[in-house]
Every structure is written in C-alpha cells, then in structure tokens.
Image (tube, rainbow, N blue to C red; front, side, top):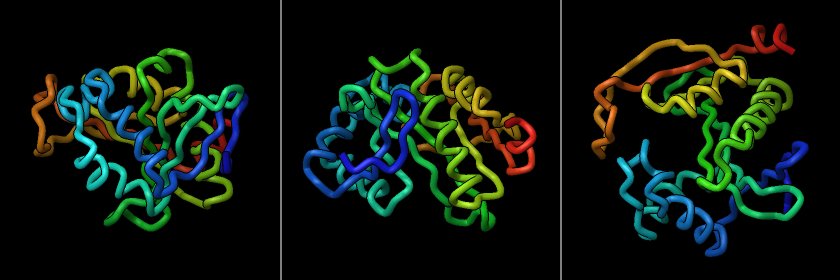
Length: 181
C-alpha cells in the first residue's frame, strides 16, 4: 500500500484509477446507512459512482483510509481546495463504512489531515459541511477544532430526511489551530 499519511491506527493513501479502488468505493456507497445523509439512503450504482463520486476523487485530495494493522478498507478522508473558494482554503470530508463508525476513525483521520493542511500544505482556513441533522459528523468536526459558522439551504438532487433544517458549515483557521495545539 502506497501510504501518504499514517496515524496510530490508520493508513491513508491516494486513490488510484483502478477497478480495485472503484470496487472499494462501490462497496462503501452501496450501503443505504452510509448514504443516509448523501442520497437519502439510496445506494448509488456502479455507473453513478464511476461517473460522479470516483471521478471527483482521482484528481487528488481524496485518500483511501485503511486500518493500519490489517489493511482493511474503512472508507475515505479528503482535504481539497474548493472551486470558487478563497485561495488558501480547503474542504475537509470523510465517509466511513458503518463497521468503522463510533470508533474514532473519522476524527483520527480528519485531525491528521487538518495538521497536514495547516502544516505541509500551507492552508489558511479549513471548512467542513454536513446536514444539520447529522450530529455524528458535526461531532467529528468539533473534535477536530472546527466551529460552527452558519446554516444554509441548497437544492440537492436527492430528498434526505431532515433536509428542511439545512446544512451547516464549520471552519477553523490556522491561527486558531495553532493556539489549540
């Protein structure tokens, strides 16, 4: 495994344009519970994943997340600049298999990417977004030092239970991160 970043329990590596990596994303995005806050629980087809999800992972910023001790695929983490955002800004994200939930893996990988973002990559601000009702994801953001910025409403292609409460943005800037360390 060509590892890009390691933590105590995780190994993160860039996704590759291979059927094996596509298979991992298909397995992840085929779970209705994993997709609850993304598509309202509708599993995505292999074709949709190849054209939408996987295609946006390959230019970079997305890392396959594996359990370091066994190599088991847990999901992915991402830290990438967003189009239209101010220079020096990046978006943090994560999606893990249900079996990995509640074990601190999302937080562990996200914290490592926050440190990489403010350190090696030189970002000035890191943001993350989720649905207001996704308390698990909001908790991860807070554990990584990000704080609530705003609630907003967008049109999404899928109806998701709780979307009437909107989405939330959390953020952390480099100066805040340095004082938290």
